[in-house]
Length: 546
Image (cartoon, rainbow, N blue to C red; front, top):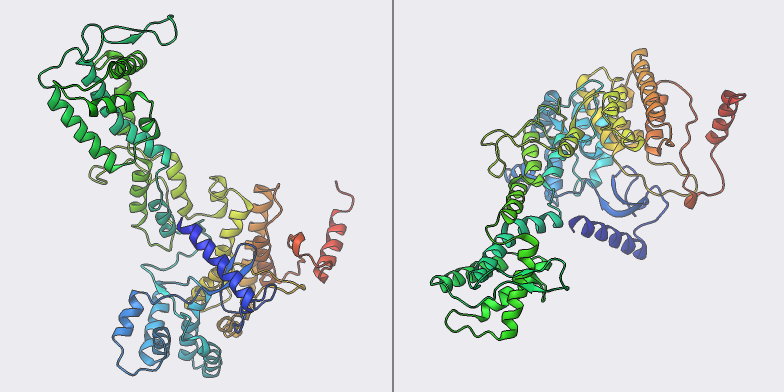
């Protein structure tokens, strides 16, 4: 429901913005008065809703910082006061210390902006820093421009993951039992025991053999004795206790439909029990006949109370009920994942998918195994080379591959910076930028490029063009292209993957006219020049082949 409500809210904001003119569909700057570099919330189809993703409530650390500031500090909002504090000496010192430790995460590209200012100022690049501040200053009252502290640095090397450990743990914690499973567990754990006690109560009033249906006889022919012919001494007390337990069960949960059926065996026996008291029975002959018929139905089908047949069925059901719920096992996995830094991955799935240890979870017995489908969910946090994740089917499509390639591209592009602190900041900013959703564009306009972000443009003069960086980009380009074609030959490479390959090609010094898949509903009837170049290249390379 929460996800549905959020989607509805996004589309309502979109329609309202289009109505009042604050949103322009098809533009690189669809939100009025907002520069192209600001990260927008984008609904399905590329429609901007008007919300800015870096405009978030202050977190606990920012609130503590704000509470410690002296009265009268400049800033119209708490966010502006925090941003301006980070432009002061103490704030700059904190940002530089954060960069040196590497213990931070950039979730949206804007969060890398003020660390870039701090890096520039430390190296006496005052003009570049002031130019950047002038671009950011109008937005300081609304947007967060600093990264979020993290428990550990981002792992280095050619390792990727589908999701971070924290995101996988959150998904596991959010798992809810299926309604059918909830109904089944209630039926086995609550209603079946109540039903057995109810049938036993009425059977104790039968004189002679218990009622049962005659095999092979006329439909519905009942044989055996009649209920309400004898009343054990403790019957009235047992009746009162049963009715009390039944009412408690009804209040605590919604009885399953079969128990509430007006003409079901259970409902008939309950109604008769509520109308009857030992010694003053108050039941008509017709009602006694219905009790006899209901007893015959359940005894013929399931066996008499205490019989071996009914005992075997109930034992099997209790064994099923004793098995831990998948949601409880998912929470065990989530707790194990929570021991890792939330923004990183895990080194091994096998180590966290072991059987539940004694005392690890109050609702799961020791020795319970983690089901394969839950271990597969946890494997989305496995950090390994892309080829390993493809081989283990953790990356199961070209679309999923496109989602992890930015991690590889970020490492290749960041290799162009000799300063390791700047390299990590650049890489995190790039990965965050690639998480931006594309907006719907018309008239052959292109999406915002990474280099258009003011703080990234300020860093480009410090990037070296040495051969090692170009070689790393070309190696990554070859690796990703080979993985996509060999592993998913049946799939047209998705546009996000084409974007990553294009970035790598530029950094590798290659002129490759890579073309995206064109959406028919926004095709304007013409192509840019790279399409002609791609056609000519393909014609030359494929001439004479199948």
